[in-house]
Length: 303
Image 1 (cartoon, rainbow, N blue to C red):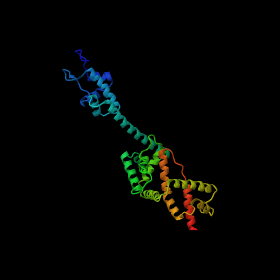
Image 2: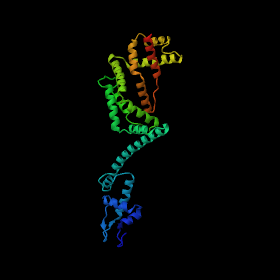
Image 3: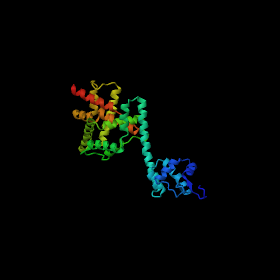
Image 4: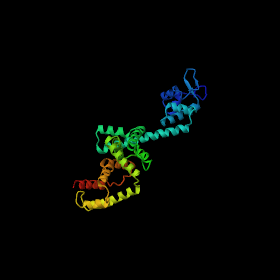
């Protein structure tokens, strides 16, 4: 309080009262966030009790991470504090998500002793912006299904959206999966495999093959081949013929082989596995059963 007894304070007095430095208060005043109400005879800035209360608000908002421009708008009443707080919460959420990814990447590096080069690549891919992730997946999905008639039109959206983001608190394994998936869907050879599988599925729809029939074939394959494998029957063994006959009946085996090689190969199997890891619920895999049928059909064709 100045000597004439009015409730006006110098910067030094505000600093002692609040614990802030004189330099900080002067800077905020220079930036127009804290306004002096008068000048002393010596030309020093003077502040009233309202300014002192405003200083506490400014400090709180700055500690929350708001920029001076936003702080100025809040204290001047140009912006509603609630809306500013909501926007800042959204920004903090994005930052927290980014930090979680960084933590997961570093955990992965520590777990497997990655080189600096591997860590840089993983971090770059795992931290892809949302826009870049969406562009990659939309391009992949568009190329996979362009011009095809799908039984479920929403499959495009599900494929794209399910691989866009890491979980809120990703495990090192999920970081690995996203990094590998981001690379996989950009691989021209894998895209060709996925396109071929989509073409077969679209052809089924056009020919009237029902989803129930496809599911019935899948269940029969898993049951018959699972039993054959448990009995130690190799795909090239003569006993494999009986399994194929029961599974396929009089179907065109060359056509079945072509289809199975297109829809059940190592590339697509890995894609499904990665998607399962990202979702946190790996799907039961029967790739070995399908591989057994492919090998048995190829062995039969060679006999």
